[in-house]
Length: 180
Image 1: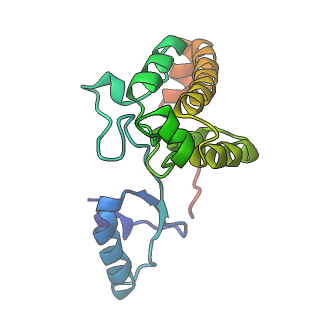
Image 2: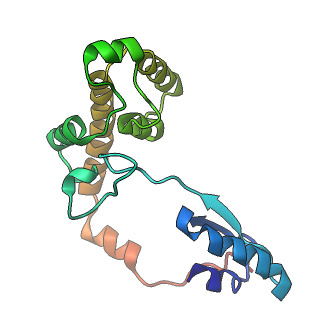
């Protein structure tokens, strides 16, 4: 239980990550900590990626098509995004061009929000997609390109890690006294 150890930390930076379901416990801890002589912990909210199938589903190891993995090939990424990424597009191209996409539920847009580094390009994509001038397939193609590039870079870097490097990183060693 995270809130039990939060109050026993003897350093000033009490910033913690959390997920929404833990919110009541952190609120309780923030209320109680000063009453028992400790500083209130701060919270850092982080957003989770939705499963490829949408907000109402979960990523699961038992469903390899629910997520993009750093071990996926470019072809696997393409297949997963094209076949499983929930779209905010419409039932037909004509309807999508007329009414635009619902970008609030569109998984490729949610992923691009995080992975696309060019904010101007992201805003352009959102605007064009929402207004029907860009279609679901085009947005998915951009996501495939962004994710494939990222995953390939990661795989190349990972391939350069040696057993010696991993052993050095994992070795038991004294940590510097950062908090006192």
